[in-house]
Length: 328
Image (cartoon, rainbow, N blue to C red; front, side, top):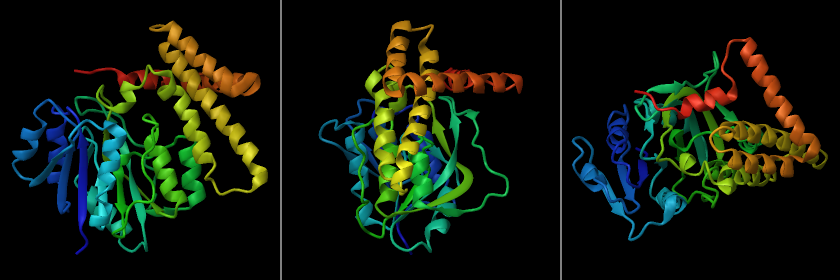
């Protein structure tokens, strides 16, 4: 019987870790090994792991804190010890059918592959604040390298907790790079670029927690990681899209437009609370987008917001603010 391992990198996540461990215990098909790699926690992480009521968990502690990216790459080091590898962040959840569905989708795929499920966004209290959009009648399917890589280039990324790797008892061909905000998107695009088959499972079997302990939240007010790294990621992944040479300038222009639009939403986010930082964000939009595409990106956001208002839907900014807002 193929072996499956879940590896959980963690650092001071005692508030969320019990629920994360419980979701693994609740799987209809549990992983054969559960490993927690502690990155120097000073809270009750070790006690929670060692005393879990229904899981036998292997607890490993790094001699020193090696950072989020370093710890993720250490998790990947277990790939050649198992047939299937799952990386689950310490504040995220997977639903009971996750392993069963993912293993079924991958079992007949030759060589190395990865599957991903859809995700609901939850807040710090575990309430769903943005449900996944599940296409009606969608079925499990294999994505072409071009389709998957293009999605990653536009930052329509899938989330690490909802991914299962079929390792073929070999090392994963890529590693996480030093782009904390978008490292997973680049990593997954490189996996596809290097030959891993990608399988989409159109079911919401993952819950991604929006909280102040995850890397995305910590990097929001750092211009390099919150804004510029997105453009670096887009350009890196765009270089892996299998497309004719003549189309590449078009692809990059479209990505520049998308980046300008994303950056305008970020500028709006900080316009009232931190106007100086908002000006910095806008300066990057103008620098990378240029006078024509940068302005077109702003116009696209405003047109989309107007359409959403007319349809009685929240604007992208309102949606983002709702995702970040605490709730009782």
